[in-house]
Structures are given as structure tokens and as C-alpha cells.
Length: 290
Image (cartoon, rainbow, N blue to C red; front, side, top):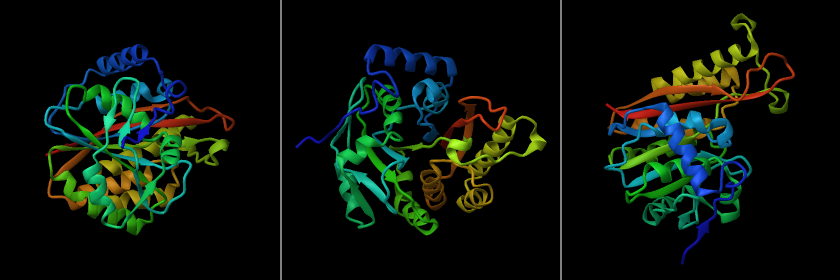
């Protein structure tokens, strides 16, 4: 029986009009001007409303060569639903205004059988935007190619469990038909986020935020999950996809394929100049096999 996850954020976070959405994605992908590479095995991309992060996200999705990929693992953080585990979708289809993506039920069953995963209800699935914001780009880039999706909502996972999930999922990286879409925004700065780290040596507040984010991005590029954990402990940087990123770093560390992460784009929703301001940062990266 079909169990459909609606495009619940279409019409608010991005256009529900297929032609408008198509034109926006086309424009952003064209603007970023990136060559398609068969070495791209994964991306880290933002998940804010497209008016904020759509352009930045193109720098992750623009590099993908869909030719040999048949399965997409989608890892996103949970913003509304508390679970100390990773959770799998009960849906059979993820809808988008520009084409639907079928769920890989075989792999969902395989992961479920490990006993390590929760199952999330459709209501929880539809309330969460972190994975949905990747779907139109994925539907666009993989159009005409037969792909299935494995959505994994990464909860408030402990350090030990990040490593456990990384080991468990690492074998999937070694199959070049698998692709990984990791969802994360970067620093959420301002009183409304309870985070106002400011190092005056960098000058303006937005420059301090940029230095903080770029330090984290450089550590992610090293591929070392322990260093990334140390950075988060020391800075408290409000990277909302910290758990999905950490799981992916552990996957890369435990697989046989050599994976190299490189950030290609960094933006902020606005430039904070006073302590009354606020912003969210967006960073896009590709993970290539070497």
C-alpha cells in the first residue's frame, strides 16, 4: 500500500508551482557553473527556505553526475521530534512539486532489522523540513534516472551512537551506486538562538561568525569526527546538522573508499553588525571518492 509523504513545506519554504520551482533551480544550478563529476559521492547542503539558502545549496547539488547512482541516503537532523536514535521513514513515496521519489523499502527493512532504528510516523516526517528541502534538488538532478531514497532522521544521538551508526552505515559508501545527501545549516547567531559568540579580533560580528564557521568547515574537511566533536564542545557553534555530519564522518572513516570533503560555498542570511541582529549561515560541500 502506498504511504505518501506530502511536500508539506511547498508553498511556504519553497514554491509549490512546478514551473516556478523548476526555473529557480535551473537558474541557481546554471549560475554556480560547476562541472558534473562521477567522483561526487555525497553532499553537505543547507535546508532553509529557498529564498535564503537555495542559491548556496546549488553549489552542493550542481556537482552531481547522476549516471551510475541508484540509491540516495538522506540524513537530516530533527528539529521538532525528540529521539536519541536515528529514525526511518514509514513512507513509500516522497512527493515534490517537480517529481516524486520512491523510498527504498528493501534497505529500510534491512536497517530496521538491526534493531538500532526508530520508525517515524508520517506526521513526524511531514513536520520535519531538514530532508524535504533537499528533495526538489534531488528530484531535479536525478530526473530520468531510476533512483530510490533512504531517508534517515538523525536524532539527538550520543557521541558513542554517532560512531555506532557510522560503522553500521559505512558499508553503503563502498557501493558506488549509493549517494549521500547530508542536511545542515551552520551558525544560528543572535539572542533568539541563545548564541552570541563574538571574537572582536575578527572585526564586525559577521566576520567573527564567518571565522567560527570556517574553522568548523576546515575540520569537517579533514574527515576527523573526533576533532569535529572537540570543536563543537569548545565553541558550542549552533550547527543544527551536527549529528548527521558526525555520522557521515564516522561512515567515511570506517569505509574502504577514501572520501574527501570540500566546501565550495559559504553564505549568511544577513550580516550581523550589532548584538540586536541575527543570522543563519549556509555552507555547501561535496564528498568525493579519491
